[in-house]
Length: 65
Image (tube, rainbow, N blue to C red; front, top):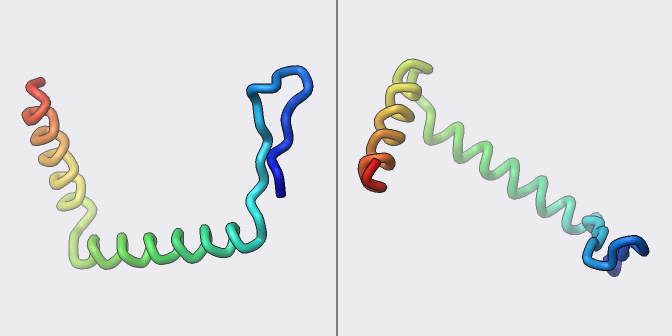
């Protein structure tokens, strides 16, 4: 389906996802959720929070903050 332009502002384009695109999006989202669950398996909430905090600090250090 071609993008539609807004008559009042020709810089704005309205697009819609096709049924095929929607199916691909859902498959990708589901695969990402499964992989995320696999990565987090065996960690407690507190362990994941500590990991997030440590990685955030490492990223800040790498950027010189």
